[in-house]
Length: 155
Image (cartoon, rainbow, N blue to C red; front, side, top):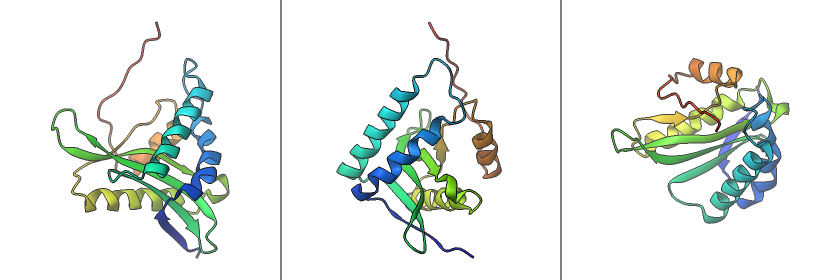
């Protein structure tokens, strides 16, 4: 069985993380979304978080026994709109195509849940584009349920 370790990301992981960001748009986001803008925003956010390392955020890297990176997850605190209490929110979880089928995504999700629980969070949330059916099914199997649906009307 392959050993997969999870560690906190450093600025040295930036190139690897940025190389995975295009996977976020492989499912075909809505036509009105500018993919280049999406990737630029994600890249800037990740770089800022790796540079400033705020305590309310963690970026974790999954790697094999040879320390080759396999994927990452970006988790941060948010505040629930109704309960006004902090929860953990997964902004990004992406695995390298070469890691498909190794359980890397599940390991990263479990690590995010552990991080959230250790900080007293009652919820772990994430957002997913409606068109990303594969991810939605995966999250459903992992125990996530739908909450608020966001509708958009292009003007």
